[in-house]
Amino acid sequence: MAKLEAASDVDLYVGSSAISREELLRRVKGVDAIVCLLTEPIDAAVLDAAGPQLKIVANVAVGYNNIDVPACRSRGVAVTNTPDVLTNACADFTWGLILAITRRLSEGERVVRAGKWGGWALDYMLGMELRGKQLGLVGVGRIGAAVADKAPAFGMRVAYTDQRAADIPNSTQMPLDRLLSTSDIVSLHVPMTPETRHLIDQKALTKMKRSAYLINTSRGPVVDEAALAWALKERLIAGAALDVYEKEPEIHAGLMSLENVLLIPHLASGTTETRTAMADLAVTNAIAVMNGKPPVTPVP
Image (cartoon, rainbow, N blue to C red):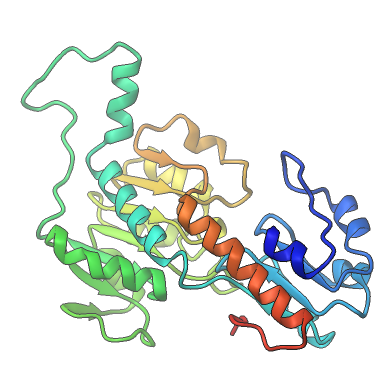
């Protein structure tokens, strides 16, 4: 904020929840830059409300499916995101989800907090070891590659779907169907596009091993939550760990009562260091464009 305030007049929204549509349309009028979060849809109506002097929409996120990029480009408005600075935090978090769901950590804590633990037993609440298992990465951008880099520490081999991915040591590229049917952990790292909406649907889930786990730290609509609730209830897969949801902050009711799903409130990049770096990069982009310079991290 100090950096922004030194460079321009700032209208900061400080509400406890996402800004309403009406207030957003009102407050963007006449601005040169919009620094937004993934909770703000920036579409043609917002761009028109802002006016022709708008120069940049700087998203404090690596994903930018909340922004109508073609509408921005047709108006000469730059669009930026915050890649790289959140890669390690999100990769670490992905492994946290993998460990938590395969070793039933949150399930076990609920038992303890409810006073229902009766003591140690040889066959009590058994999970799955990672060593010797296959990690399947659906999409291998920066975060997916960073997740893959950590796989050898857990003794896992890696399979991935992205034919455009850089070389990943000790890994195998394979079609999605084969990856789903052979992987013990399926971790999603694709952007939100029309092609990836409900990429993991009922048909995809039925191809997975009954012993497999699904991890989603990408975008909620990549997974059909109704289909996932059905697959988990029927034990067609062993479990799932979700950080993102189709209609955030709403979560499909069918998931809420299931013990074999870990539900996290969109925290993958949630470290003080990372969120600060994301905000700083978005501000750097906004200031650069307002001063007539090219953005540091324009969207592709």
